Length: 506
Ligand SMILES: Cc1ncc(COP(=O)(O)O)c(C=O)c1O
Image: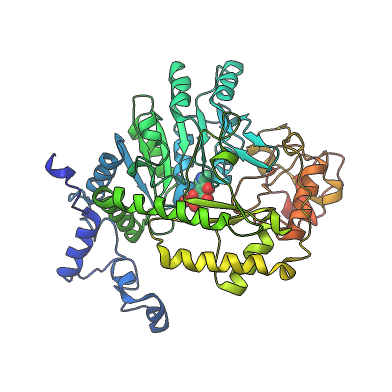
């Protein structure tokens, strides 16, 4: 092992400890000066360790020209641990990482193949960049009303129809844990010398256990993006993106990320990333093996509860649906209780102090990680058992008018960027069908826009969102989250604007 690939080391954490050991005095930001200037009431809640670790990345943790290569050494160790050639740390979540990846593959008006089950951060990337999406259809489970990643063959067909596409982006695993066939997809892309981007925000743990689905770098993807705070032990916002192969210049990728990133990265977040890599390199197999065994037990126990059903490989698998499944997001169908995921989630939080990850019209997902053990899952099982007996409190749950897959898909009639930045008008939702939407309408979580700028709205999607909001769906990015009105592209047929301040872009 080369000396700088010693996985017992953690360069960021070590530099942090050294900074503290030397009692270096920073006449620099952050202005709290190692907690001394922070409000005592804030110190009481956060603890001084947070402030003491919060120092400048260059000019404190490392010297002003980063001659200690602290971050670089930590990134190289991470790359080595996950079989990538280059790794970049980001403190702005995968929301930034995925945009950097997209911008390094395509530019304004160029085409990118994108699975339509993409997260809203990908759609934001399309809006900001002016990239033209060629949507690839997810595999729809018509019985369970759920989307799985598109089939590799569908990307192949899209490349055939759009040979000028610059590359492809796929989301795998989805927030529900279902995975694409990444090896086949990489092969399809590389036959055309096009790069494959994998939004693997939910896959931080995948490289570290053989019983987990295949990892994008091992499958041959060019770039993959991972949130270490989701399935890993990183702090919120801690994300990494990895690169391999010769299709994308690492300097260009770094430059694209630099366009979007902060000049004041949090070294606390860097430390979380560095520590996670060390933890996984040294103990990942054991910790994740235990988590997988625990998940198998928990899944079996939940399945015994009346009215609950855990979605497993039989539900999500098979050639028509997902290619693989991560069992750690435990997705529970609550429709047998004749209620919605929203009502179940609210009840569990209010009555049992248990927060679930995502909820939809018929499911909740309880995410397990290596951070869980029988103590935590016993509480969960107890709460779920109580939920099955609380049927009275869960009724009546307003019904969500869920469209068929065909009805759910809207036609992209304009570039997302043009519709978003052009003149707009807010119209009553009942008048919005047939109009081009000028905003994202995203049930969150999981964060996949039901409608996005440039798509033509149709009645079934509007009814889905409106009935969803009534039932407890969260649509936080809409200008009117209640969806009494919807923001659409202004046309000449609309009345002239009374307030010129609302015409920033025409
Ligand atoms: C598939 C997917 N990609 C990207 C993101 C953005 O990640 P982050 O929250 O780290 O910015 C998310 C967030 O939930 C996601 O689900």
